[in-house]
Structure formats: C-alpha cells, structure tokens
Length: 128
Image 1: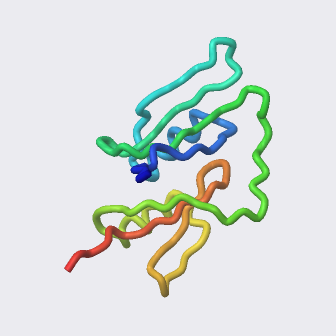
Image 2: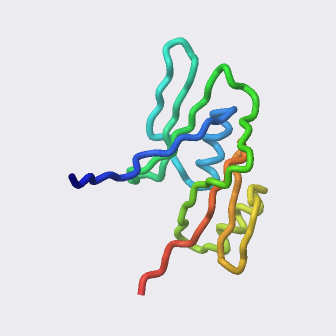
C-alpha cells in the first residue's frame, strides 16, 4: 500500500491567545485562518498561517492551564523560510527583542514566541 500524506498543522499550547496571535502576525505575517471555541469555554483553538498556504500552526488556549508551560530541554522547533532582505528581517526581529540564538556561520537564527517556543528563521533557498 502506498500512502500519500502531507503535513496539515502543528499544535502549540499558549497562555495568552491574543498576545500569541499578535506575535505571529507581527513577527511572521501569519494570519488567523480558523477558530474553534468549546461551548463551555474550556478551550479556544486558532489556526494561523501565511495567506494561501495549506500548512498551519494551531495555537491552543486552555482555560484551566493559566500558568506557563514547562518546555524542558526539548529542542524541537518550528522552521520558516522568509522572503526578502534576510538581513533586514533579522534586524527587524532584533528590534522586536525576540531573537534568542544566532548562528552566523550557518546563516540562521532563532526567535522565540511569548511562551518561549523557538522558531528557526532561514532565507528562501536559492535555486541555480
């Protein structure tokens, strides 16, 4: 059996949904594409992505988990490629105060969101 699959979304839990929505809009241009609210208010889920892209980031707010999430030593992270002037985008993120790690030799850096999830920022790959 051949299975054809593609990524649909990735979930992270957030402590302040509005703050996270603002961050992802400001830092990466991600727009809210869909929202799910539990009828009794137990949770709110928002999906964000770049307009026209099928892969999304699911931001889940849980009413009964107001404290910060313990992310431990897990080094998992999201990675995005940005179009345009990579150095100018890096400077913009530096001014936002969200750069948490830079590797100049590999020409990459990481930003962290309000809940301290890390996002690797890469330039668009050049094709020859």
